[in-house]
Image (cartoon, rainbow, N blue to C red; front, side, top):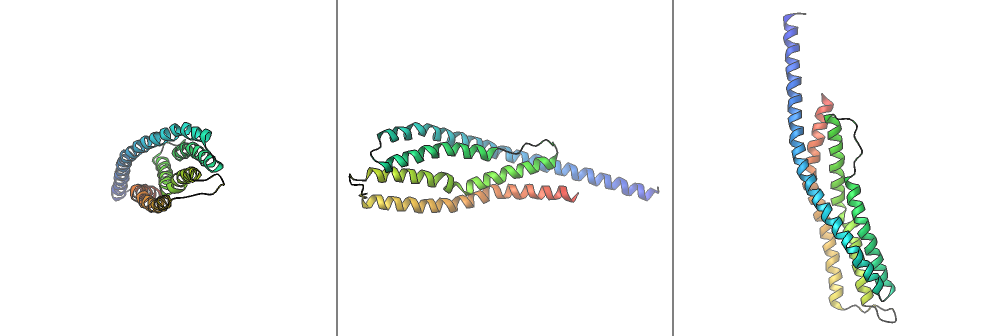
Length: 200
């Protein structure tokens, strides 16, 4: 082996070790950022799950005092929604177990976690807000039903339902934007680091 070959091999080893050190530093920075958002998610989940579970007795009590089938249906739907919300939140935090302890495995797992939380936030109207709205709407419509089964809805209630419906549409688009803004950059960063690993 010539001296030039030795120099070239030595330079390649230095470059590969410096790129590994750089990647490790980037992953450590990513871990610090994701640790903060994971803490925020745990607090959010704890609050949402607690509220959902605390509302179950309220809905069940409402079911016992409901005066017609529409109110009963609303209370049953509200109870089921209060059970589904904790399930959905806990399911989104569940990850495929990773037996590998490499940087690549960590990045794949983090990508899965971020994608799940992003999807959860984007679809919050369908699995959270809409079922609660429909439940409350059925309960209040039932309260405005007369003995013949005809709903006598005052104008202010019609306006209320319309405003809530527009609010749901606004929340849908706001959450889509918020999901992209909050999780998009982290997902992009994870993808970039996975691509860097694949190129090496």
